[in-house]
Length: 142
Image (cartoon, rainbow, N blue to C red; front, side, top):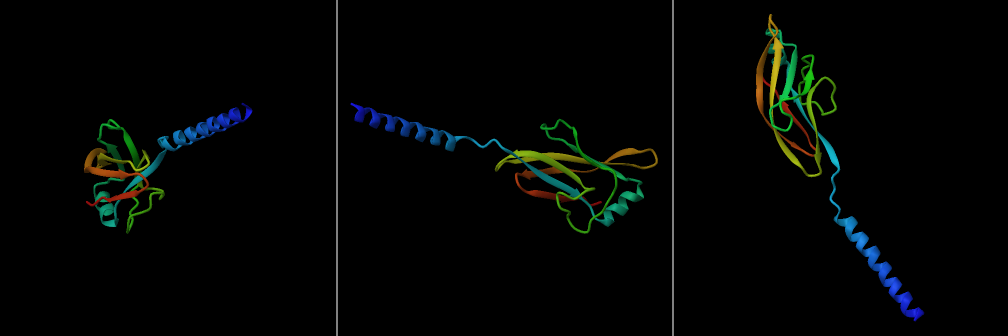
C-alpha cells in the first residue's frame, strides 16, 4: 500500500510539473518594444526652408491611433548629409511601442511654421510603416 501511494504521488507530482511547463510555454508574450522612425533633410531643403523663414517643423499623426496628436517637434532646422540614427538629438522622430513582430502603418503630415506672419504650411504628408525592432527613416525634400 505504501509503495502504491509513493508511485501515485510521483505520478501526480510529475503531471503537475508537466502541466506547469506546458502553461508557461503557451503563455503569450505581451512585452512591448519601442521602434522609431526618423524624418530628416539635407542642406538643400534647409536652405529652401530658410528662404521662407521656416525654422520649426511639427509632425502630426493622421491615423486614428493618435487622433491627430502632435508626436514630435524639432525647433531648429539641422540638416544631415545622410540619414541620422534613431538616437540622434535634434531630429524629428516618431517613437511607438509595438509588440514583438508587430507592424503598423500610420499617416503623417509635417508642417513648417514661418513667413512674416508665422503661417502654418503643410509641406509633406504620407504613410510610413513602423516595424518592431527597426529604425526607419524618411528624407524630406523641398
